[in-house]
Length: 83
Image (cartoon, rainbow, N blue to C red; front, side):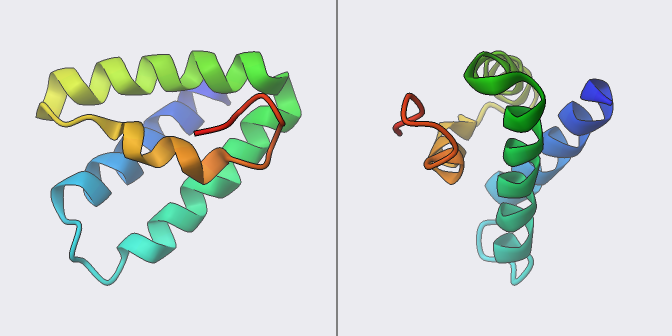
């Protein structure tokens, strides 16, 4: 399941970074938030950190854009996650 969520997040974040003016961005950000909840429910704050580390490395390498702007979408899942 983790690999499927990782790939979905890669696709969602890449889309949002490459087409920020698309009407689909709001919907995709909502899904990013939902996946964050799933990850947190499954593995807590450590899982969020580990996932984001992988996402950032892959996306930065593949499209040369930083997905850190999506970190705040997971704010509120845990008091430790404050971006």
